[in-house]
Length: 583
Image (cartoon, rainbow, N blue to C red):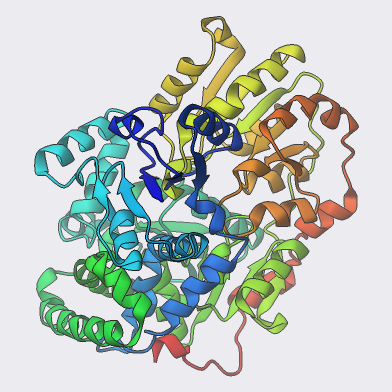
């Protein structure tokens, strides 16, 4: 059996591999059914995606089991477990390890001849699991010149401000340089506040919505990067950059060396005990740990400095998977401060594999509460249904609205954006034209406007012109307010559409995320599932038949009782024990 492993940046029908015959082609990325049907016809070979083995939550629950083996074994001088903090950063690589195991099981251990279009980390994972080398048509893109070329290609698609931010994120992650320029911009507060840590605009929007509900209370928004800063701060929210509280490298140098040696010993022990850990190590999945430990200690001490110098009584965190904002939540829990978590999205699949840190969790409705309990096994006493403010439920005048495709950064999870757009956008354009409506493509903050515009131009006729808009940096609520209907895969935007009584259609044939979001949205009425690209043609009829349901809206969004919200965020619990991961 001859198997071709296809890199997400390569095409099955273009490249030297097309000159050979394959029994099976395994796409290491993912696209839709139309793409694989076309490739199957052209190649005469069965084509599948490795992501079809992700299931609804099974892959990430397996990731949790692997991570659990190392918890409590890599602890710093103040008791923080750095495996718990940093291990989950590799959740996508660990999911890939799970997918490769499932692929091997699908092949029934067959001693197939394996070849790959190019070498990368996933191929190294495959070699570890299958126990033999993979022949590659192209080498791994590791050379300095190649890296520079790729960097410049990427930079061309970014705004100057994005390039600057990415540069600082990469070369000054611990604020070694930025701390000098920012030191004079500390908040220097007098009155007690709850800390709102944020690294992204979506997180900022979420935590500020909660702060806006408690105008009589005060908050401090502390951002780890420029894109998290908001130009619309409620009057009761002060702001500061974490860089202003940065510490000199020399202050953590000795502990960093000590922890790095402990990390090396930890990895050796784990490789000897856990086969999956050894496979991950062989593939280089843990190579990031030493460098991130040093950065992590600098971030830890920056947050400690902020907590020591500002009158913080609690932390409300909107993203505890990103360790930059998970750290203050852990430190708050250890200090006996209120530690509260609120997901900035409709659902948080990270709880399928991460350890809950917060003492209290705010959810927006019954859908999120039930998902959180299934994913994390949290007790109901730690969860409060309290959405931030009134939902934007004013009905939208859809008569002249646009057909809006809410795009996502598919490449982050291995998606083939060009193939996904090719399957969806021409069909959506056709439907919009028939309905005499504009097609709007709303981009996620992580997507490049320039790259997406070029892609749309390449797949639509020149006559499309003003009938299509590609939007970035426009608030989603503004786009929804002018929508006839929305289309997405599994984005939280489905919930926002439902709350505005706008029908949202979910591209079920592209559901490879493995966290079960799409099914949950459909189960609670937040979206209507399209099973195949051809179903896009049914949108006009389904949109005409759509009737908003009050019960659905109540299950998605239940406005917080102000007294309850004040108690959760500012109240004092009689007993607070240190969290196990931080002891």
